[in-house]
Length: 360
Image 1 (spheres, helix red, strand yellow):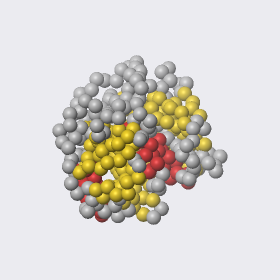
Image 2 (cartoon, one colour; image 1 turned 45 degrees about the vertical axis):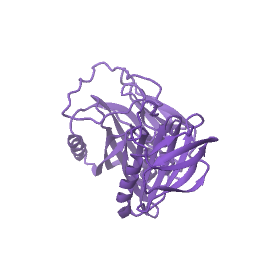
Image 3 (tube, one colour; image 1 turned 135 degrees about the vertical axis):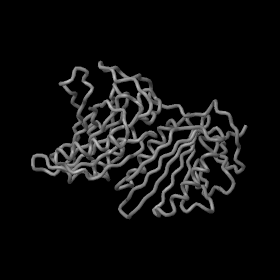
Image 4 (cartoon, one colour; image 1 turned 60 degrees about the vertical axis):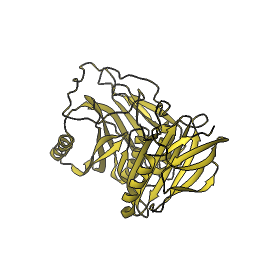
């Protein structure tokens, strides 16, 4: 089985620019970034050596958390997987505290939180399966002392922000009604290509131009954003501004960038989403949408999260929209969950029509 034992252990206030390295699981074709302070040990029990354990120091403790990376052959329903986890832990006399689904890269990740006693010490674990349409799937297992589990799990979510396929493509959700080729008895390496994803819409045909225009300067060049009626810009300062709408209950902040001197669009969204994550104490749900061209030919991708901070409920949304050599990032945050549903609908309607132009 493929087990990702994700255990991160930096304090929530720790610096975010810790040097990182890239870990690649070559047989399922997935990789993620991890702090260089972690140590990796390859399994010596399997000839293909595809299983690894990452040992992570826990700040303020002599204990270490572990992150095992492995894979499992599974092609059935979500309910069956969760039932298997429940029954297996019942037989081990371990308590399954919670089971839930979280979207990563547009695909469900199936989680089970387990509490138990290991050699007299309270221990917590999260087992997760990346429910991709592949015969073999990435499975995650996060384990740490229960006392440190909250900060470990917080950083685990930060690691999920960097998860990506080695071939640069986006995964598909599994469907038990679709036949898949059986897993090979001899492990085969997944295709490897540069993982950067080109989200530009250079070949997309513009079929709609929203009527409202917003002019700004990006990397010393004039750029225009088109948005639907009802939206207007305030506080324009260089490459950023606030988008307002009479029906929007909270601020929508927008920043523009050029791909010529900034991160690629999807990488920029990943970094923005990781920064926003640090303001959460708990993430209950996360939804990602695959990059896709909207009605105006602008390639858009969104991340929505619902959780809590130290003051209460939080709903946050980040998006990226790219056309040609330019892209924008949007940031939304609401602490009143009763308002967030209508806000989300309004923002998603905006992003279906938003576009970017460079005046000639």
